[in-house]
Length: 124
Image (cartoon, rainbow, N blue to C red; front, side):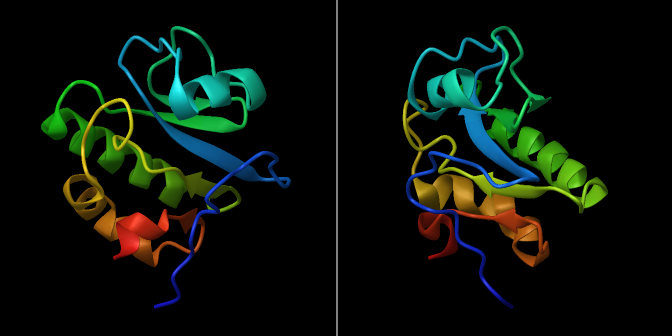
């Protein structure tokens, strides 16, 4: 399997690329990657999940079960949209306080998708 790794820092996106970031269910994108998505990639204040502009929000602040379910919805979305390339940031591993070891297993099914790039910390 070819590993697709998200760059450590994303400041621009190529056509068709989507910035995937951790959010909260209320879409209060006040800090971290969520704030960056709000300022640069079309994330919408008040929208806590899904495609918004050139970004995709995955809520991570409501617990691990909720995060896992949101990641499952993201993977289904990515499968349905092979024309887009998703650059997943280390969601849940900043303000939400989880470790890559806790979050990475949720993305196991995404590893085989050619249009999903994952952080190196999720591939270890």
